[in-house]
Length: 345
Ligand code: NAP
Ligand code: GDD
Image (tube, rainbow, N blue to C red):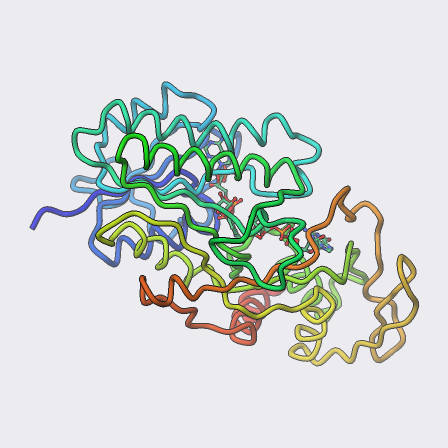
């Protein structure tokens, strides 16, 4: 049987690394788009990287950029994939307030560039996955959110993603493209970017445990997040593209924790006896020797915060037969083990 071909925009990111391995295991030929960088940016792909001189490669990387329409359309028409996964984004919410125009260009218009290329060369019925986000629910008052919850974006990042979600739906309805929006809640792993809060906490506290760092500076400790494992979530992306009809799905765990609860879980596993004192900006975490190990730094507070995210994944459970395999405890243990193996480097 002819092997399926996938094209991943954002292959060098956390999800790109997990999805590539997942699709290679399913015997796909995987093409990935990387950006030109002054230093190597493929560290998450080291064990699946194939030298360009090899014949019959299963994993092939190409230069391209979502803000360059010609690279997007020429890659799609050259590769003619069965499935396109758009995971590429300026994905940091806080940074999106600093570079709003760039973020909107990549996260919003970038999606349109791919869809337009599919529309004009869609002889082969290319399927499309858009990496949507729970951040789109932003300021919602609903305790838990599903596919029918109205969006209320609170950042340039979320505004760009709402555009991408909407244009994906419009291209599906107007042109019959098999296009799906995943609305994924936070998902983490040992490969998570270092400036996202779970990785920052696990890495920072591991270093503190190993006496390689004294203190960790954080922002808001009271926002609530629904954290799953990236490895479980990429399977849902693939399932969405392998149904009879395209559709949009929330992918989540339906459990939520505050940042402070996450810190307490990590401390417990690292056998750090954390004690909290003070309130507001003066709240601090101390270890058993009364050393201050956690402190608030105003620089990490956002102009607008998303306070409450908890996803109801009933639709994915019913139609995709998907459910998360790993819970928060397993996720945290895996993340800590990885940091300990790397000796807090
Ligand atoms: P990530 O680790 O930040 O990876 C983002 C990827 O996009 C990287 O490969 C990055 O390349 C690439 N990229 C950035 N700008 C680009 C551009 N102009 N052209 C082409 N590629 C570009 O993000 P992630 O955590 O894997 O998330 C994957 C996607 O899911 C993102 O769209 C994110 O917004 C969305 N999402 C993530 C979560 C989550 O909790 N992880 C939840 C919901 C939705 P470089 O390596 O060169 O920077
Ligand atoms: N990054 C960061 N750094 N966040 C902090 C810090 C800190 O020092 N201190 C507290 N936080 C709080 C943030 O204010 C936010 O409420 C929460 O921790 C989570 O922040 P992030 O880990 O940066 O994730 P996010 O929820 O803003 O965004 C991630 O998840 C989205 C899905 O809901 C990203 O992966 C987005 O790309 C994704 O769409």
